[in-house]
Image (tube, rainbow, N blue to C red; front, side, top):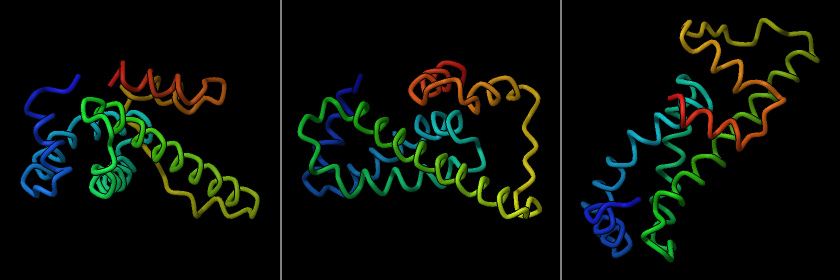
Length: 138
């Protein structure tokens, strides 16, 4: 649900009010980063977040129903996160196929994140369900 203040920021951003856009992005940044950490992990969340904020800046004027700002933003974030995960999966598969496992980065997850990470990395869970799990547990 969008607050009245956030709605004013959306409307201001759609009218090229730079201050409203900056306030809107600051407001979205915390929620989005937490959501993205659950989907792509903390290491990649900042990169995806930056991409999401750029898309918001470029396309906020085209948002027809400002009250649906959060749904629109989380949909953008989900799409970009899943695209990043797909790219990473392809990169890892290519590295495995070429026999150059040394090129893969070493990742050391925090113990409290191990169970959630294993669920999110499981191929048995559809992407939409992964998003729900990430939102619920993060």
